[in-house]
Length: 165
Ligand SMILES: [Zn+2]
Image 1 (cartoon, rainbow, N blue to C red):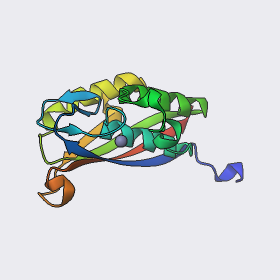
Image 2: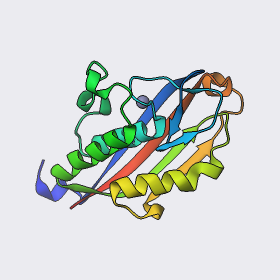
Image 3: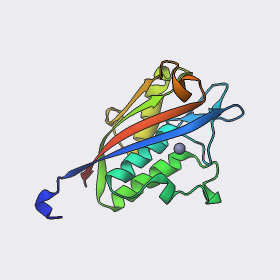
């Protein structure tokens, strides 16, 4: 592609889902929620951090979280997803990018996420060396419809804008 067609920023999108089961801790946005169920996965199954990692990697055209941190690799078993977020940031920095801002939405029936959002913003901003207002997190239910509505699972969606560093 000719240089003149390249903008000094790139956008990425990430999406992730996890099943909710009893007997698992519920990590989301880098914090642990008190709940009767937790997200099932090879890592700590932090759906929001995974969606953000995928959006970051996607914006830099670096593949996805499963490519860089495969669940066939036992070193990632039960890994803290904050480590995956930090490593994803290192990958995009190595490719010459830095994060402009993140916008995300978590779809979850229970528990209510709103009171926990400032703590999540703080954790994510710290890991990525951003200001908290560069990390938007929103929460929605699915109005009791579908797998989120039946409290069988949780979904997260994220968009990330990268700028050339
Ligand atoms: Zn995930």
